[in-house]
Amino acid sequence: MQAIVDFFGSYGFLIYLVAQNAVLALSVYIMLLAGQLSLACIGFMAIGAYSSALLSMNAGVPYPFSLVLAAMISAGIAFLIGGPILRLKGVYLAITTVGFGELVRFTVLNWDYAGGAMGLSAIPAATETWHVFAFLVLLLYGFHQLRHSRYGRALVAIGRDEMAARTMGIPTTRYKIAAFVAGAVMASVAGSFSAHHTNYLSPSEFSFFAAVLVLIYAVFGGLGSYWGPVLGAIVLTLLPEVFRFLQDWRMIIYGVSVLVVVVFVPDGLLEVRKLFRRRKDRVAHADPAMEGPKA
Image 1 (cartoon, one colour):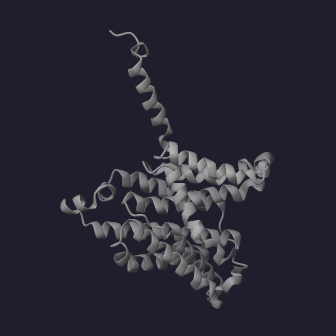
Image 2 (cartoon, rainbow, N blue to C red; image 1 turned 90 degrees about the vertical axis):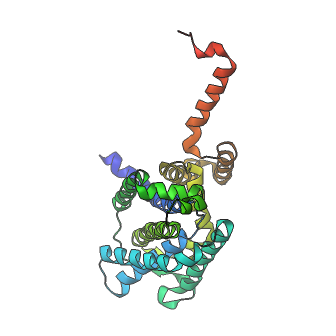
């Protein structure tokens, strides 16, 4: 029992970070499912974090309500901006959502009420690690249900060919906005959890690099299933810690690992097993002796 307590004492924050990054990766994944390259997740994470913290610190709003109100603020903003920006596609949408994230970051950076460049400190501590894991499990259950639902099939159809989906009568704009709002709520809740877990917020946490990192989690794990972004977040969050004994070399290993997966397994880590299976099939067809005795 003491060993478990010691383990969580040493690695508690890392375990929390794994779950938080998995939630953020899923917030990006739902947009990629609809074929939309959006990097707005860090902007919504910042909105959720600062809204929840300010509501708790300055208005005395209890933690659960501040978390819900922050998610509602993010959902409202996502709904308002979703219509105009989701008319853009591909790299143009990516650039616009990066601009949104930078707009949020510079707003809190220059807003004295939000602490400016010094950030916010002494935020009430309320988030427990199990809160994030419970939310992650809830999201995974939601994605499982989505996969077999009409809404999920419509998102996949939009992601594969939006024009064809529209021709089939799917209201593509409505579905894309719904996915955008859902992703914003996920990122916002992750931000609220973070604010009340670390008790401190700084605008530098919500940089463009952080947005790209979340996208890498999703792509590294694989986009064929909702388990892919979760796997990518787990591996890439733990990797620098596993190789911590190598000091500066660990970040080189991190970069090489991402490069190797993107080049040799472009569908992500989740598809490694299929890769080996296809290779085995090719070898078996090339050498009939490996197919075994025929009946």
